[in-house]
Each structure stands twice: as C-alpha cells, then as structure tokens.
Image 1 (cartoon, rainbow, N blue to C red):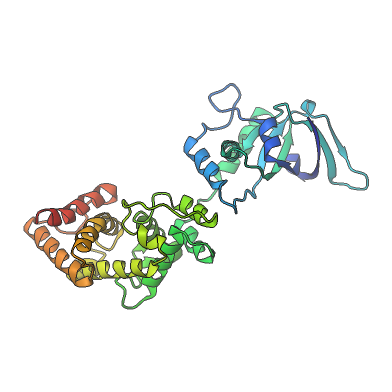
Image 2: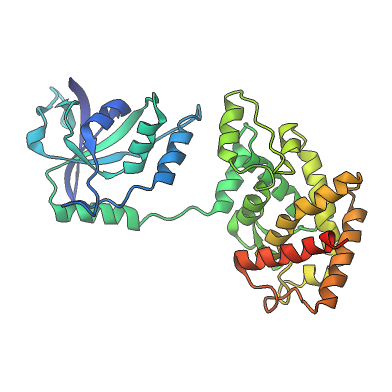
Amino acid sequence: MIIKFHVIEITQSVGTFYVGKMKSSSLIHISKTIRRNEDGGIQRELAKSRVKEIAKYCEDPDAAFPTPIILNVKGEDIISLEPLDGSNDLYELIIDDEKEIAEILDGQHRVEGIKHAGGFEVELMIVMMFDLTEEEKAYIFSTINSNQTKVDKSLIYDLFELSNTRSPHKTCHEIARIMNSDRNSPFCGKLKMLGKKSDKTAVLSQGTFVSYLCRLISNKPQQDMIDIKNGIEIKDDDRYVLRKYFKKKRDDIILKLLNNYFSAVANVFFEEWEDNWEYILSKTTGYGALLKAFPYFYVKGAKSRKLTQEYFEEEFRKAKNFLRESNIRLTSQDIPSGEYGQIKLARLLIQCIDDE
C-alpha cells in the first residue's frame, strides 16, 4: 500500500536526514534488522528477554515511546521525496509500506517488542537517513550505544514518588524514605537517597533497599503496576510474605514489620549494625541476607502470633550466640560480599530457627 507522510529535513555535520512519524504497524512492515553475524550487519543479537519486557510494557495504558527509531533507507527504494510548497524544511515522503526498505540502526528491541505485543498500535517517531555506507552505519550505531549513561536505580525508584498509581516499587520507595528520615528508625541516615551519600553513616543505596525489599512483595512488580492501572486485581502469592499486605493497601503494616525486624537487629547486634567500617551487617551484604532470612522469621512468628520487636530480638539473640559459638564474625573476612555472602549469612540465621 502506498503511504504518504510529512518529514522535516535536518542538516547536521553527519549529513542530511529526515524526521517524521509512522504507525508502528507500517514501520514493522517496512523495516528489517541486519545483525553483526550476518553479511554487512551492524546490529547486536536480539535480546529476547528485552523484547518480552517491551511487549509486556505495551500492556501499560500509559506506555510511551518518545525516542526515535533510526533507519537507513536506499534512495532508490522510496517513491518520492518532494518539498512542500512554501516550506523550506517540510517534505512529503511517499513509500510502499509492503516492502522492507528500511534497515534499523537503533531501536530493534522496541520494534520487536511492539510487534510481539500483538494488536498494539502506536505512532512512532522515526529518523530516516539515506544511502549510508557500512562505515557510516557502524559509526552511528556505535556512537549512540557507547555514549548512553545508565540511570541510577536510586533515582528511578525515587521518581515513583511522583506516581499516583500504587505499585510495589512505589510502596518500597515510600518505606525507604520514611525509614531514612525517622529518628526512631534503625535506618535513619543510613540510606544514600538518589544514590548520593549525604551523611557518613549512609552505606546502603536507596536503589538496593528498594529492589531487595520489593522481592518480598512481587517477582513481577511491573506487571502488578500495569494490572492496578487497568483495574485488574493482583493475584495472591504466598511465596512473597509481604504481598498480602500490599494487596490490601496496608503499607503501614509492612513498615511496622520492617521497623520491628531491623530494630531488633540493631539492638541485638548494636556494634555490628553501627560500625560499618568493621562490619558488613548494615551494608548490602548484611541487608540482603537479612531480607533473605526474613520470611523464615516471619512465618515462625506468625504461627505463634508474635511479630513484635521483642519476638525478633529473642530470635536474634539466639542467632548472635550461635555465631559467637561458631566463631563467625560479621566481617568481610567471614562473610564475603556479593550474592554468595548473602546466602551464607541468611542460611546461618535460618539455621538458628531450624535447630529448635
């Protein structure tokens, strides 16, 4: 089918290119991706997980794709490109959208994700460049992808505060903010909000706090957010011990449980919690381990209807005695950093419960 649309001519040092918009269904028809392992290709291998993420994102009623898809087109493959009367920069471009005339230089995952969303239609901004050499295509691709700066997760989670929609990430961010500012909280001043260390006691990033805590609520927080936006009740899942409170909008109970749990840690392991130079307990390794162990402490306490700070202190005193008798100190020498160290410490804490 012949389609016509308007594009704006842009001239830069790299050359002249054209910016316009196109329906995603049309873009899917006319575009193709030539990968590095194919003859003449410059694109990386398609990341299927990223495609699935984007397809899932398309279910969000607020899904947006504001950045352009960059294409290379052979001039001989278009029908016409003519300036509009009375305009210096506005052109009418005519193409046949049944032919694959455009090579994707940037945006292959967005295009594939939208394609896999099935029935999803959106207008996409496109940048059309014409008759690029292989060297020029490679240069543009490498420049775009090598100069991107990854956004700090702490900033991403902090921005959930601006959202009016409930989500696991928003709940965890609000809890992080409260616990970092409350003078009675064991995390008071210990979180690096927005990834920046504003106090010498701040040793744990906001991003780490939120991402680890979120694992006690959901394994698909984005899906939960999309379902809530679409008025779909989120599903129960007993594997995530704090999920039922999130589902009932009882974030206050989640906050209370965390305060009880970590206040018990801070009281029983006072030196280890406060001295972050010598010990790892209030750092990422310790925090991750404590949250991995939390479901076991929670289930035991829930059975006897004891989830108070006193209950947790009683359990952590047993853990402290066990570690002392085992000659294990909460330092990097005995508990290594990373996932291995978190699992090791969590298992030691859980062992205290299982041995009873």
